[in-house]
Image (cartoon, rainbow, N blue to C red):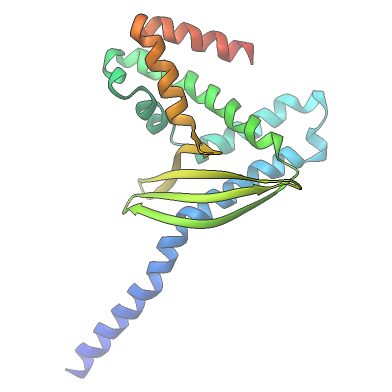
Length: 198
């Protein structure tokens, strides 16, 4: 009986100790990744125009590790996802990833020299979380929230809310308007041009 009680309490302690680690996981992941982005943006050796391609590649590697581009894409297209062929979906995910990467980097780039604080983690469900952060400037605070999903044991971002504007919602509205009167191929052509312009 005593042995069983010891085993029970041993398991209980392991469970109690493991819960905070699990709960902190999303915030730890996003904070670490954002700091990696900032390290690249602040790196003096990557400031010159000649280093632009190197900087872009470094940021792209971090971006791919940080974001769930498939989740981003599906949530942005919603019901329109079914209008795309498998080949069109693949191209859309690739193109939209490039557009989102540029949008996110541009947002962060504006404030790369400011202080960024991560202050709240909310577990929305077992596999979804929202991490609240803010950029503190000399005159104001800019809220940036990261919505995350747990897939294959890894937390990834599927939406970023900057100053109460969701990137997914913003693009969903744009894409719904385009697809209301155009084909998936025409939307892809718009995205191809947008990516090429970058």
